[in-house]
Image (cartoon, rainbow, N blue to C red):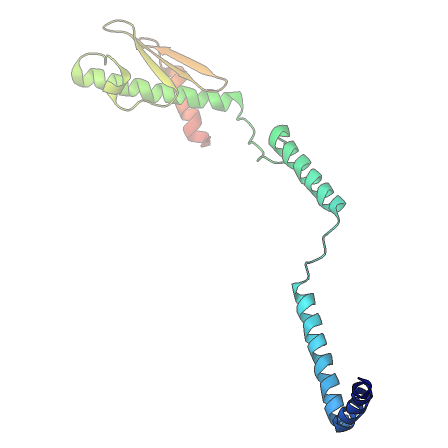
Length: 178
């Protein structure tokens, strides 16, 4: 047994002598290859790295501000948001327009009476109605026409003079009121 113990260190020494050491270029090439592999691995890890999270406070404050603005616009109905309404026309002009509508409707009714010898039972028999004007047949020979706008109402009953209606039509036509 003794001889085996002595052989083992001798055999190891022989094996070491038979080992070839690498040259300087081979070692440099191996080191360069390892460094290159480590650099590629680092680049791949950085490309996969998640983007850093933004702080939560600015996001929450932006959300709160936009929510407050939306609530203000939705429920507050600010005046600056809607269009400015045009001013109402003077009462005189509005009255002239309503009187003109009543006059036009009475002319249709009178035209129907002249053609048919009777009053229409309802307004559409005399032709299309003028917006804002109502017709009421009181009896076989009399009727009432009422015109109404936002602030003015004009009533004409058949048999009354039409001077005020004709004057209103003349005002509208001469001034070109809209």
